[in-house]
Image 1 (cartoon, rainbow, N blue to C red):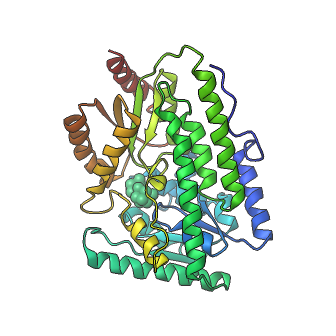
Image 2: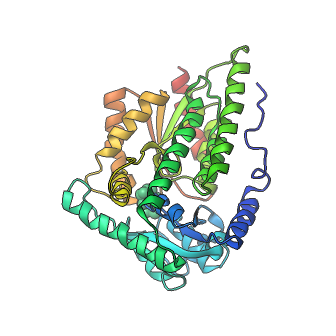
Length: 385
Ligand code: SF4
Ligand code: SF4
């Protein structure tokens, strides 16, 4: 079936450049940019401050050799790439950011932030490591409060409870619309592919307001149209793959590409680069919207936490919703936390759901393309039976 492109308006051509131009015009209109690296950065507080959050460059092989002149070569490529972009002054989103939010997640990231924190005003969110302890939540709530004060000071603007509540409600609405859109991956074969999901979620993670809601509603209509046309055509089901593990973007998307090139479909992506930022809403209408925001972020699963049992519940929900035929766990070389958890994920996915499981360790280079093709190809053949 030939499909109408979903994003064909102002964002689609050279999305990076367009987004940069858009950030610049937001800046000119008094809405500064906040650069971030991690799912734990509370976007609603950034929106409530009148600023625009943007994920910073971290997914290209291009900057890694420069980064390795300072950082150890055996760090995960995401950390090396992000540092390399800053070191070589080639991340346009970092350059345009007025302030940066960092966080105490894995050791490599924490130590990397120490090297860049003096370049721009940077707040390091202190993430407690044991999310099941109530005392940990109190510490996290303080840290989130410090983040709010940091933005208030940086942008000389008070963020009141009503600003936070408005941002919560808007963000929840956006998340629901996004989940409806991504829900088109439930069809067999899916009616939306991973590249479309990526572009749409990236935009909706930045720009707030009515314009973005209207944009998502438009995308929803295009997909409904796609579904109507698909219902009149004969369509061959594809092997459905769920991808779990480390965040995947840029050069690591080679894994998605290989799955697609070999005739499979990526129907769900567990990571922060996929469904994680959308899966959990924030309670609305509470007496303390800051605490409501803090609680939602506190409950995000991440391998940096111990125990990380909520990840299994989240994976259950994804499997039940998107019905993958197999799970591919992508581990970036040097990411010990996801690598060790991979053992638990395998046990869970194969034991509870009887799904084939493939663990892939990779990086941002093209050196392992042949091996990826071989291993993913064998998995897809097994699924096709
Ligand atoms: S995997 Fe964990 S540390 Fe990495 S971006 Fe996601 S939440 Fe942050
Ligand atoms: S992928 Fe793993 S090692 Fe790399 S930044 Fe994320 S948690 Fe840290």
